[in-house]
Image (cartoon, rainbow, N blue to C red; front, top):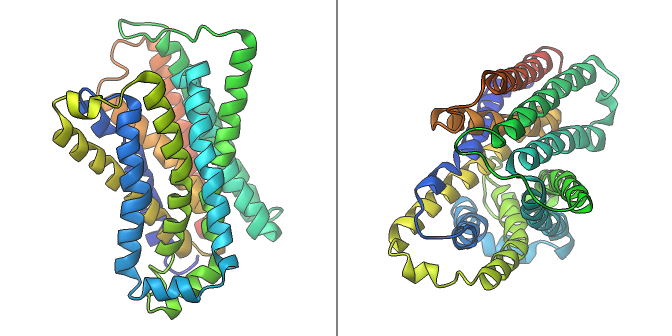
Length: 345
């Protein structure tokens, strides 16, 4: 077992909780549309917080960036651009096929791309070992659970007093939505590869006086501030299309809405920081195991919190069984991944 494995495992689980909980404050936002909320959330979580945290963690951040060759920034910049595009395709895909089906597809694909991909890229020698076999078994349980849960979510949207209308697009539009969600699942994990591939930038931060455990914060700042470009553009586009810019001043809840949105940003970015620390503590398999637990933990906790908030109240027994079974598979997958790799990795 790698030194610090249990601490890394705990951090990955807590990171999943933070990412699963970050949308809860949205329930209490009043008078703003999605684009109003998202432009504030993105500005705080993807630009303001990353650079503030990085500047505190790295005593001479400016010098570290100036002294680093520009090619050291490329992995983070490329990952940020890809990740930002994934945020846009997520919005488009969910709109075409519905929230439950869209989220299930994105979560399933993200789990595969975010955990299997790093295994192939960074530790290919582990694929055909006992560690690799355990990892694949755990991944199958997690993806199977997301599939079962997703089916229950789609059925939930079709029944009950709070049922959501099904998308009314053509078959080709629905197919396009499926593709958009699948693509989102892949693009949305780009930050994992950008972080793992920015070792030279991290070394530069250490040379600028940062402790190794927090030197990677500069990588997050580069990735997410680059991805912010797409988030900002898409939010402004929707604001213009829906004519919702006036909601900031007309809602009468600017301060409370801003505070709630900043809380969302703190939860989300806090989860990202903990994932990065967890990936480092989990050893060479950190990018794979850490992201697998982080992403599946996000799905697990988001739905448990949704259950506690009454989102599934009034659902039929069959839907509830699917919901519980799906989450049970996810818990089993996380357990197998953590315990199996702890004893064999």
